[in-house]
Length: 461
Image (cartoon, rainbow, N blue to C red; front, side, top):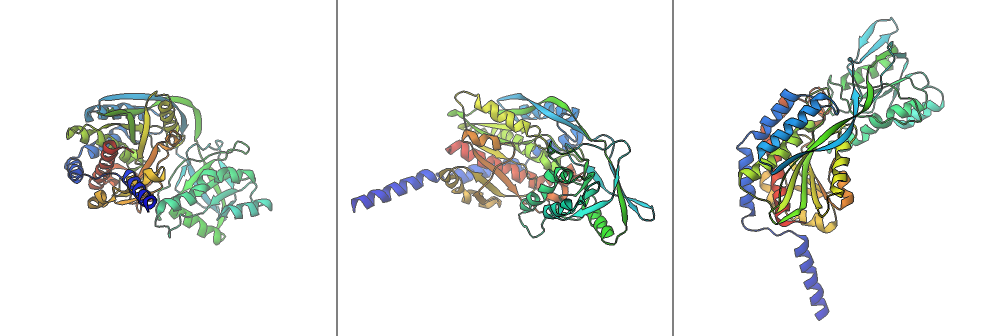
């Protein structure tokens, strides 16, 4: 009987350790944080500046470096105790003169297609590539036709739509993303001359959506272009009706030598446990087609806002909070790797928690967490505190590309999960502009991020 009593006591004690305490005034503190963010437009105005005064921020470009300087200024103005630039070498990819693609019909008339070169892709020769087009629905079909010699010398058109039945749209994106990431090299394996890929977009529109591809050095590096979803439907129908004689593709894209760049870091030093570091951030680079408003200017200005709101309210966190603008998430992840490497070399520091916002500035629904069972259970116990803000979908499994390398240090990873239904309307497209962002939704995301970080700083993990 005594042993059972002790076991029960230990079990209760373990539960109390796992679940984070909630004090009576915690809800009041979180309300003050939310009110301060929602009453102000600092994050939105910072985003306006980043989009309209800086613009597209492709890694290694002059505009990316201007963004480094401007976000460092924003962090200083937000009240960060210290701000510094963290060096990293980044790939330098350039699109060059606008790429083109034409359908040539059997009557020799032509029709232009809405296309955009994939990031990191190589271009064509000056005269371009002309070839018969073969539509591919999946990799099994590619291999089957390739083995019969029916791919060689032809333009491969990957027509793999994002699955509309996936309510969690990032799952559909992951499935379709395999064709953008590895499709060009797999087509090259079978002797293709160039590649067109249906854009990774949830809806039908006229915007081609770019994104990085990854070449396998064992095969030729084919020119690879994204095709708008409307034109993907049009081309598919024209092929089915046997109207298409060939496709003509021209691209001037190319990779240059790596160039120096920087992450931007600003922090508030912890009052009681300054060597326990909490990281929050988004990626500063963007693709060159739009303004990088949702992807990921939103995550950057939300992270800066966390510094501002804590300073404005006079809240000194017990643990150090660092806001990081990561460079080169889109086509290399060099910034995230550089930050993690620097963290490994910070003697005496423990990087306990990292939160990334890189899913757009839409209305927040909650957070996903990756860590030990005990750590995740502790975070999930705060669910009631986020219910008033509609962001109480807290669950296991989360993080982000830039903070991923911190996991090897034992860091608990988290990702902000906004509503994703409209994200892939603008993702990597020229429609990703400042006007597509709601100030209310952007601010609410910043508010719940600040609330979560205050809780972690207050109670630890």
